[in-house]
Amino acid sequence: MTTIDNLISELEHIAENPREAVADYLSKTGSKAVGVAPVYTPEELVHAAGMLPVGIWGGQNVTLDLAKQYFPAFCNSVVFTCMELALKGTYNQLSAAIIPGMDDTLICLGQNWKAAIKDIPFITLVYPQNRKLSAGVKYLVSEIENVKKELEKVCGKEISEESIFDSIDIYNEHRKTMREFVELAATHPNSINNVQRSHIIKSAYFMLKEEHTQKVKLINDELKKLPEEKYDGHKIITTGFILDSKEILEIMESNALRIVGDDIAHETRQFRTDVPRKENALLSIATQWSEIEGCSFAYDPFRIRGKMVAKLAKDRDAEGVVFALLKFCDTEEYDAPILLDDIHDAGLKAVTIEIDQESGSIEQIRTRLQTFAEML
Image (cartoon, rainbow, N blue to C red; front, side, top):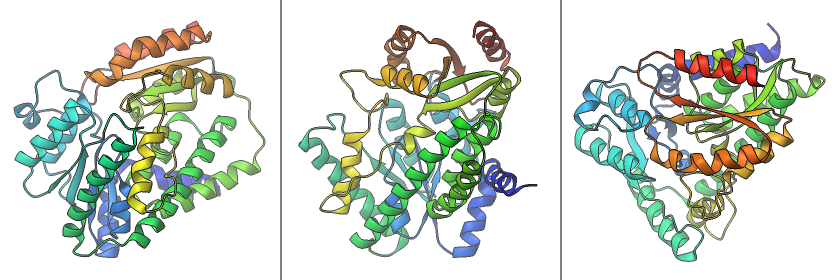
């Protein structure tokens, strides 16, 4: 295997075996791990406390049973599977979980977690929707201060201002590296396939960011040595909440649909906006929320998300857009009509597929993607 193959294989293994990765961190460091739920959380505080932030975004092909006691059938599947995995002990490596209340369903997840998961303390965090007002930023600072206090109880020490700023720098470097990676993956579509791209991004949820940055920088260096590649199939952009299903990504592969860019909450939205440097660390983290654009969870009266996706498609020479619509996710569903109109107005073709993390058939998705490939 080449150097790049070894690096990709290592990150793919971590993405597919998160419990093993977290256990390895805990055994080597003697530290603790803290869960960070969708969509955005101040991971820098967890990192500054000397603990590992672990992404909890549910899982694929989860059979729902215990969680049905806590949510109605029409609840979005990521929240459902998060609760199911928590009730079954999958997250028992965690010493706490930060669950932001970014919509009604996530608020319910936090409250149900508090009631049912006694061994993993729930840390609440409410993001203001009037996020560009100074009052909104000030309010978020107070919320983040509470998260900091709760994390200090977990780690047993004070989280210093200096350590938070250090973590902000580490995270911004990771964001920069990941932005470079997705651009290089777009210009090397034969060297980085859809599954590899997803796994490289996903593995960051189960590693210290500085370690992930180091490995992705090496991948980037190897890609830079290669000439830009021509792809014989169809280049596409993906948008939605989450699209880490290996089965669906492989269906795209079999239909020569190569992802060259994304607007996925679980993927690029996590690293496309840096934390700006302000007079204090908590204000810096809070200000980032006011600067995030093109996300269904961040109030935007001008609805620019569709235009952003269309521009990305044009910049990456993509032919179409796949909207991975999370089942029963109202927040994403509200964006869909305007988003799709803007994409079509830009002269791009689009298809919507329904993402459901619960066990079930994906044949309808296979048919829709096959038809979409034929349209392109």
